[in-house]
Image 1 (cartoon, rainbow, N blue to C red):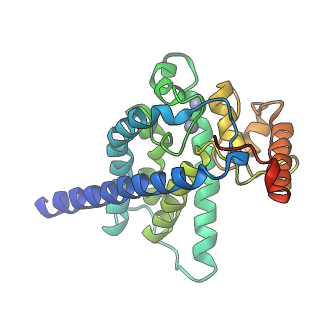
Image 2 (cartoon, rainbow, N blue to C red):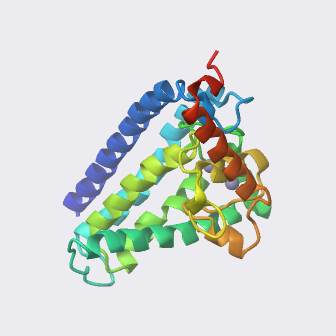
Length: 260
Ligand SMILES: [Zn+2]
Ligand SMILES: [Zn+2]
C-alpha cells in the first residue's frame, strides 16, 4: 500500500516537474521568437504579455490538478487497474490510437468547456477568460474546476479504453505544446484545412473564444462547434484574412508591421 502511494506521488511529482519546466522553457523561447514575427499576431492592439506573471502563478497552481489527473491515469495503466487489456502497439496502431484519443478528447473538451460557460459553473471558468488576448502563458491559467473537468480525461480514459500508457503520454505531450501554441496569440495554422469544409482549427479559432467569449468551444477541431452552431460567424473570414496577411508579409518582408 505504501509502495503504491509512493509510486503515485513519484509519478505526480515527475509529471509536474516536466510539465511546468517545459512550460517555462518553451514559453520563454516562444516569446523571444515571436517578437520577430509581428505579422502573425492575431490581436495586434492588445498586449497579453502584461499578464505573464499572473498567468505563470495561476498555472503553477492549476498544474497540480492537471498533473495529478495524468499521474493517476498513468498509475492505473502501469498497475493494470483498467477495464480491458491494452491492444498491441505497432507502427500503425500506435499513431491510430493517439489519433482516436485526440478526437475523443476534443468531444470531451467541448462538453465540459460549454459546462464552464453555463449558469453556476461560469464563475469557475472566468479566471481563464481574464486573458482576453491570450499568450503562450495562458494555457494553464485556470481554476482547479477547469483543470479537473478538462484534464480528468487523462485519468478516466486509461481506465476505460484498451490503450496502453504510451498512447496517453504521446497525446498529453501533443496537448501540452499544442495548447501553448493555440493560446500564443500568433497564427501558424491558418490555411484551407482550418476553414470550411475542413475540420481543423487555426490558432485564431481559440483566440476568438478569448476575445468574444461565447463561440468556438472546442480544442483541436472546429467540427463540434459547426455541428452545434457555436462557431463564430466571422471565423472562416478571419482565418482567411490571417492567412493572407502572413502570406503577404512573407512574400514582401518590407510590408510586415514593424516590431517597434
Ligand atoms: Zn471558455
Ligand atoms: Zn483558452
